[in-house]
Image (cartoon, rainbow, N blue to C red):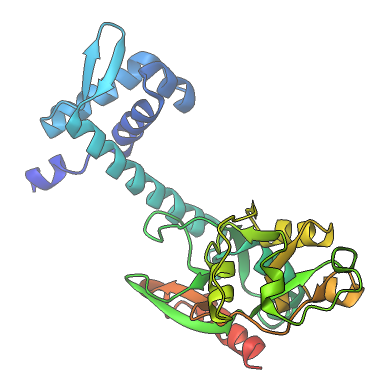
Length: 296
C-alpha cells in the first residue's frame, strides 16, 4: 500500500510540476496558478522527494528538465488534461448527454449544419459541442466522443461507420471559361489549377484516371475547400470539388461543371468513434441519424 501511495502524488504537486515544466520557470507557474514562487518550488521538491527522482536541474535562478523530467512532464500533462475533461463533463452534463464531435470545417458548414436542426429536434436531451479539425488528432489526448473524418477507417482502437463517398468534379467560374465548351480532359491540362492542401493527389489522380500525365507545375494551393471554392468563383482557375459541397454556387451560376467526369476515390466520409464510446447514447443517436441522412 505504501508503494502505491508513493506512486500517486497529490494533484497540487502534479499541477505545480506540469506548469513549471510548460512555463520553464517556477515564477511562470506561480503566476498561472496564483501561488507564490516559494510554494511552487516546495511542491516540486516534495514531488521529487516522493518519487525519489530528480525532475529539474537547478542552475542559478533557472530550471531545466532532466531527461526523466521531460518524459514525466509529457505524461502528466496528458493525465491532467484527462482529469480536467472528465470533471468538465461531470459538471456540465449530469445526465451523461453531452456529445463532443470533431468535424471538417467545410463539410460541417455546407452539409452538416443545414441538416443539424433535425437532429436536435429529435434529440433535445443531447448537448453537442463542435470542434473543427483539419489536422490529425488523438482521441486519447482530446476530449472527443466521435469525429467525422475523410479517408479510410484505419484508426487503431476505433470503429468506423461509412457515411458517403466524395465525387469531385472539375468546376470553374463562367467568366473564366467564357463560351468555351470543354470536350477533352486534356484541355484542362493547359489551365491554371486550384489545389486543396488536404487533397494533394486529387488532380494527379484525376488526370491519371483520364489516361493523362499530370502537369509538372502544381498551381495555387489553398488550405480549405471554402477557400478553393471562392478562388474558383473569383475566376482564378479550375478546381476539383465535391458536387455536394458546391450546390449553392452551382445553383447561383457562380460555378459550372466543366466535365461530368468525377474523380473515383477509394476514401470516403466516416464517423470515427473510439471503441470505449461505441455504445454511448449520444454517439449511437448521432450514428443512426447520419445513416438516415446519407442513405440516398
